[in-house]
Image 1 (cartoon, rainbow, N blue to C red):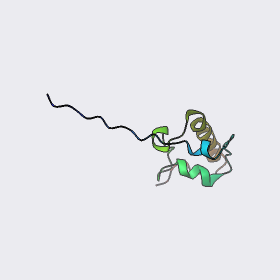
Image 2: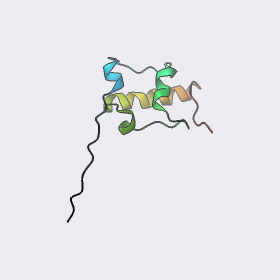
Image 3: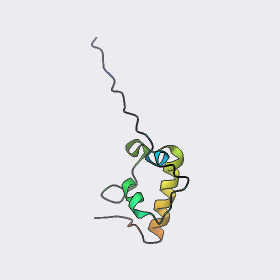
Amino acid sequence: MPRVRQRRRKIKACKLCEMNLDYVDYKDTKLLKDFLNEKGKILPRRLTGNCAKHQRMVKTAIKRARQMALLPYLKY
């Protein structure tokens, strides 16, 4: 039987922890756009490298920014 090699995932560091952010502001659209894909969907943690705490903050901030019409819901 041949051995199957498993890939080791490169662990990404949380960008927001490195910036020492305590709170993700919904008005900071430049920062929030880093966590959206080209269609306007929120990127998952495994792609962004966020920790769970900051991913929750990003999620609520994006949803608030969408509600205030600072970010689009969808891009076509």
